[in-house]
Length: 408
Length: 168
Image (tube, rainbow over all chains, first blue to last red; front, top):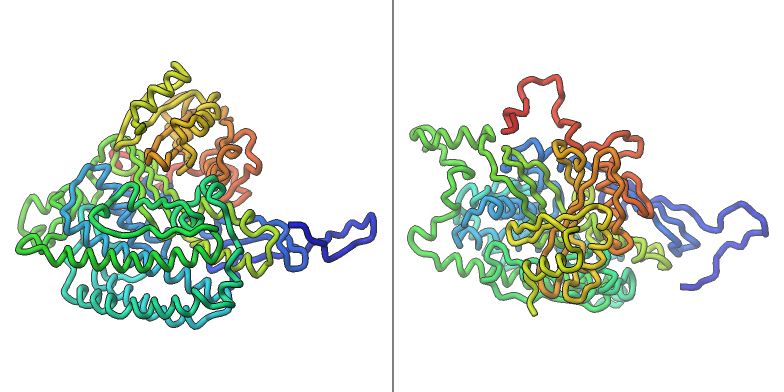
């Protein structure tokens, strides 16, 4: 974009015609700890350099000294807006690596939890886009519905944000009736609220003018930059890991993959919005399927894998075998098979991959997390170059950058 | 024509002969290796050959095998062909004393930061990289922390030796 520079300096001057502006590491516009050093000419962004790593916690190194089940709490802290997806992604990676078969009911329960997490992730992202365009109302309003999701997590696993939900092989306990009641409450109340939330923004003239045509990217560039998830789909590529490489029985569900065309902030908003409706539909289907289990099948919440799944506490006190497994699991004395695996799930921001290398020890020899937002954040400069500074802020939030996932 | 692991393997062998080696399939993903000198040729061929079209770089990371003398560091590329929905793992190894590997960032923009990360943790020197500096760790750091020579635990502790982790 050609434009006139705002400052004209006398010939031979050593002064710059641009201003250097630091956004971050802690700044209301970054929604997380990362820094942007921008060169701005008036209000136009000339260039930017992104700095990440402020909350780097060496997860990949930590994982090399932990048995598999102790790595789950680490994955919580990647994308902490949708921790359950990270947890499940890690369990699924382990189960694929160890070649464990899971009962269908466990798969469906997991689908419910993962889709709830996707809704809470997209809800935060979209409402933050609203905040950054000047509409705080939506954000405050939907918070109480995210709260309903957190209450369901709490009922299932006991915690809310960093969930550590489930185990390798299933869930730590069966879903209680209260959990299902809370799920029903959520399914009843949430669609109406989502519709209201959509009405607040989707055809709102101020919102549209702020977001349409800003932060756009073509499908080719998005692919070259390694975009995945809603950001890639907004650019028009219908890649979704749930469809391409189904895990946790996603092939049993009927859902659409919404795509956009221009890859701009508005399309990203619409794609996330449409995905929330699809998630509601998936949860309803999964709940339906769960209710169809009868008799003992309706009580199944984990696979029968004593090497990896902790026995019941009362069995530990009364049965020798359970005591042995309990000890071996807790002490991390289970040797893994040799080999390597790459396994991915559709996280809140895109393809969340786990590359696990095992040399036959008790801990991973190497574990690498493919964090989607680390990979697509490098496109930020290209997305905002030549645009207004205020659009850069909206672009930053509509990319759904989560510091925990950027830095691992 | 559907692309399968066998056709990829045959295609690569036809093109590169015995320069590509150690084909194996684990969990459905074909993996192979080559010498580090031809990594760009292989990646470019995988990218540009219409019947392969591995145009998406899913992941790039390093692994350190301290016991493989002369090939201690490995760079692993995970590629994806979206239209055929098939993944591929390609790796090149390099000596820990001479860590130069050609950069893939000209082919994939996404490789830029992933190579910086790999440099940051393993010290692999990506030749031709536009901005090869540390990304997650502090700039002042003078070692590459994910190499196996830097154990995680405090070395003065005797209650956590390797034996307890199955590597006696």
